[in-house]
Length: 280
Image (cartoon, rainbow, N blue to C red):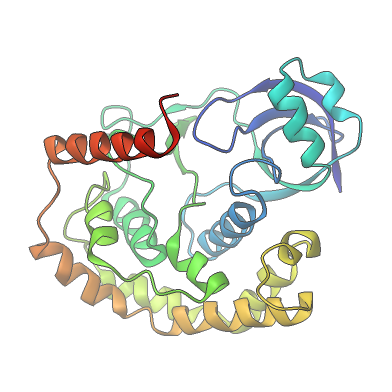
């Protein structure tokens, strides 16, 4: 397993405080620490989403397991970062760092194939991934190629872990803000690819999950039983992927939230937070 050997910097984006580190294999990695944000849950969701994306030929980075050893925190200057690193000793989620990548824009991605855009959108719709929109695309361009990032908000996979049903209109409304939302060229083709994934491939990706991630999720008392539950729920979702057609029909008639409405909702949420906890 690759070990973290050099600390470069924090990547201050989102709540997870990812880090750029050097690995024992000489490569640079972006690491999402298990001791920050939603920790192990986000790591499991991201791992499974990327593994599934690979099987569907979605342009996602290959996930990696990176070991952070005790004492690595001494390389960080920020006290908050050191504290999170101390909580993250053990196996963490990582992906290769693309040195020359730039953020995706409609202009920089003008050459991207429409069929690929459609598949990326349908994959997010299948996952109920609410963290991709025009202002925050979570996509990058590297050497002309498109890479789709950050799947930790994929609610369908969270449902495979906690057993909850996230099939709700507000969630679909968020997905309608997707930069590639439109009438997909061939949703039936994408659904066929999903259903064609062999159950054993789902078994393999779940089996690869570190026991120390699974243990804190409290899916079941035993790691093996927890993995079995997650695996069976994912297989059920895969086999029921024709639900994408229903979601597409709903999106056609679902009213999008305006920026003004979003701003008012954000203000209301902030006021409620300040009433409960005080101003930051």
